[in-house]
Length: 243
Image (cartoon, rainbow, N blue to C red; front, side, top):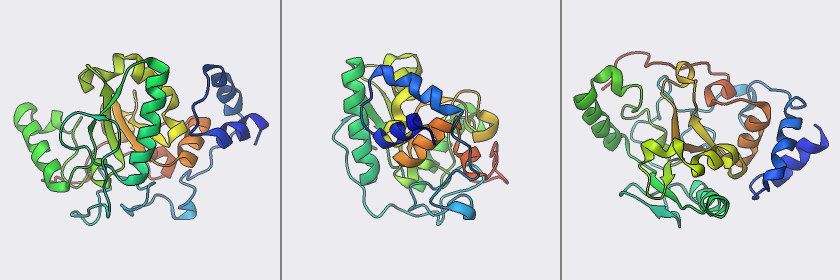
């Protein structure tokens, strides 16, 4: 590993000055892409344990068991909108650091719109979307009950204060978060141009906590989805009808 890459990994999670960005680019070519990248799982491939911060949840791999609930949920010390404002402690602490750094950088407050959701709550939400948009369209932006990352307590939908979350992508805060979330252990889970891999249209607001080590490695290696990182392959649709 190059000195530049080592320095970046060593300081991940700290607020880095804008001048540090070129160092990540320079380090890019020097970082091999191991397979799978989920290093704590190693040769076992992707993790299906919902208690693991690196668990893979998508249309082919639901939360198991379906009624699983994180053992502990807390309310992070950030601005919130709506009632789903709980996260697992490790993700909550990281979101506080991310939000504070983001506000220092942009002058705008980062708001938590939605955190933990139970499988039953998610299914009710999904059904409302199906009623309004039809199942085919709903499946492009909403997970079915039991298939949502929000159930792990590691996913956070965020926005900039005063902006609907669906318009978050156009904000300065979103651009900062996209460039720096990895420093705090988060990835933008559904990036642009990855629908055939993740199964969902781009969602700049949907952040997923995976830990600083993995997030840093993905950033340096240029890997943008957890499907690619885990070696589990694309999950563009459900294996069979559900719900």
